Length: 66
Image (cartoon, rainbow, N blue to C red; front, side, top):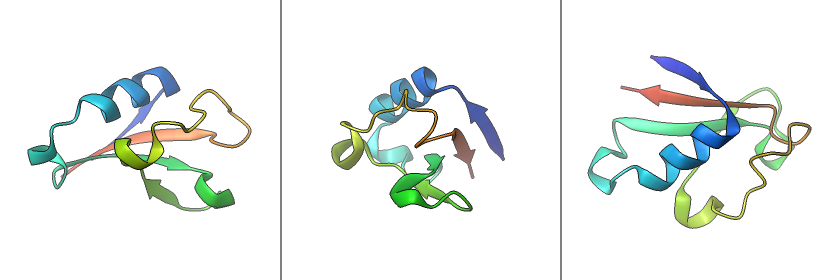
């Protein structure tokens, strides 16, 4: 299941996801590394400095639940 997220909620969820849920819940975005066709998984440790509010670079966030 995929759920569209606004940038604020995407950042909060990404920060709060416990490690034990990482294989069941993913926060993803379109536009990462200028890839506007596919979604890319975000990891808080690597992506905490991402500009979540830059709608031109990162136009869409989703929560994927398995």
